[in-house]
Image 1 (cartoon, chains in turn purple, brown):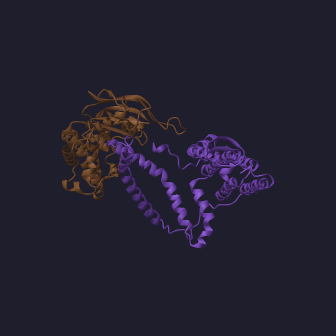
Image 2 (image 1 turned 90 degrees about the horizontal axis):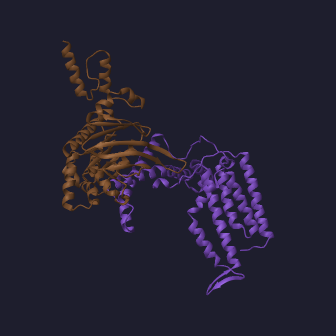
Image 3 (image 1 turned 180 degrees about the vertical axis):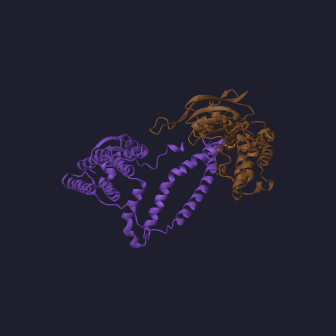
Length: 270
Length: 285
């Protein structure tokens, strides 16, 4: 049951997107997210959505996987979509007492739904095509300037790496402890909410203890190998920007430019 | 009479996904009441999966499991009753301890069974006695105990449910030789006194040889052999084929026999071997 949750979603592959430098990928995808919200008419929205779709197809991961990632926020999408429908101005299409749907509301709803969906899928592109290690390494490099403000960037990145690394371990452990308690008759599937929460105690306490034990062991093992933080630490894999990244930056900026251009030229609908 | 009967059991992990993995393939067997069965096999041979199927923690993809002649999945809602009757001690069971006191932790199972306080009290004390936990320790926090004591407390937590069948998955893993011997003796004693069925999964051929009546050998999710301990270990070649070996003493006796000494090649324990060699040498003189 716990096994079914996928958190480390990285899917190894050899596509162009996979081979991009993590830093470039993080920054460009973040900018893309921002530009989804910059669009103000259907032409710019279509431009950015099409661009996102091309990126998604370029990853070589089946579209079904991306659509499945939408499943988790389906409720949010529907809810915000419906709410936006009633929120807008313009010609009235339908009215019932104080509820009214207008063309502006319809536009709002369409924009919101597309924005959230594209945002979610673009986020998935990053986690699907970048291994957790590359992701944290990339973040560390991007956040490096913060070091001047005495933010301990390396330590934060190391904690993130460790946290990501131990998610599957802890999930497996949860599974084991749950089975052990079930074997002693713990009933975790039935009863009301209070009983279920209470039934989790025999799982959570051993899990917490084992997490602390693991943390202690890991800290000891790291110290035995003379780990003392980021100072003077070199890397085995040095990140470097390649021709792909430069090309990606150019294409992205052209698209972003197009979005701004169409925003200025065509009338805004929201 | 057979207490557990498995019929053409098949089990697949993650069926329907790309990670589909056949853990068990067409396993059928019968375990008789009052038997002590050893289960051996390489890592990944499906022995842990098999024992988890027996108490309903996993549901077979195909095939049926009968407990006392009744299909355990006949009423899925009542699978808990099976879990009380087929007690399961997992690998490294000390990591499941969670209560404030050892007493409360051992009482967790009986409490879930809905027994009254007096009965729980009786069961906890008898389980503690079987596993060699001192009365004084019962009021301690389980986290203050030593490693070996924790292990025994966790085993007591399953024994206290007084199961008809007790399954132990690698109960001696990670214990020192003394602790291992002591625990094995306790399991053998428990089996003798309560006269119930015990299934013991182990990597150690020596452990199994010492106490098992019959041995189930598994490899790649299949049943390779299921026979008396003597028969299984006199079949050394077959065992080596699946990456296992016979106990050291058995191997020595088999080699001695090859060299022309008149000893029993299916000797299972060091004591037996010692006597065999002595009697053989005295015959020569």
